[in-house]
Length: 331
Image 1 (cartoon, rainbow, N blue to C red):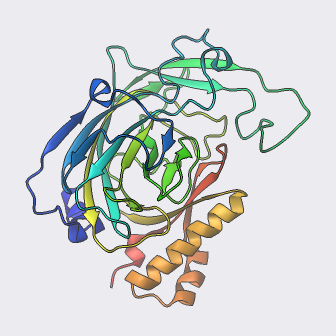
Image 2 (cartoon, helix red, strand yellow):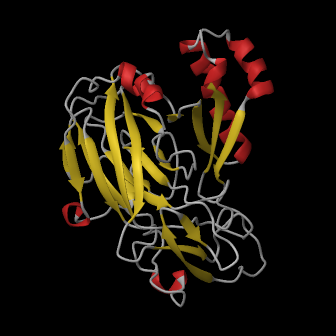
């Protein structure tokens, strides 16, 4: 990550907090108190920050810390749907419906004296299992819990395999206007997108639909493959540092993402092809509105150079990001 691209980012060039001195806030487990399993306008705010502020957040793992050993089976220690605990809501001064909240993930570190991640196969969950939405008469797949040592150098899957430590936030949201949506479900508000690009160095742009934006964050992953195929990533408790800003009057229908080299529009739906359609439609409209492309030229060109990232195809709705390299967006 270089400073230069951040200086040229949408967040920096259009955010109202760019000239402010940065104030750092700490959202510890103790300060959070009650973690949330729904994302909506009805929960009590945990803090208020200003555009441009930094927040250091202690997130819990997706299992709320209840899966402690490989002998702990999810069906025995978890109560569905009380998973994916969220920090927040964090209020941002001046945020109003029709604005966009920018969330720059600065860093993510494993938390705890001996950090371990958890990956589970859970009954009736996962892309290759029968579920409530994909009804099958066959038996459930075996229930397995795996504990994995994690540090900032690697994810130690086995004696044979060390996976790269590539952390990201699985669930990032502003509150919907009226609905309270469970923290497993992604939608227009953001939610459980499980998009691997949403890690350190990225900026996520979320539509603001309630006063104060009401930012929720949680579900840190130490690493994850495209699709999160078994249903869980390497879920771990994290110390995640974010910086927030506000883009006034930039009205989005769906979340967007920016990195040093790419912009990406994000869609969530079932079936998977509809999530892809949403993402590509939003990308075409973005290119037309802000990068000087004719709509049909953008549509045809994306057929040649568009990039697709599969976030999840295991959650109640599937998530797809459609992106284009910034080299194609220069004036």
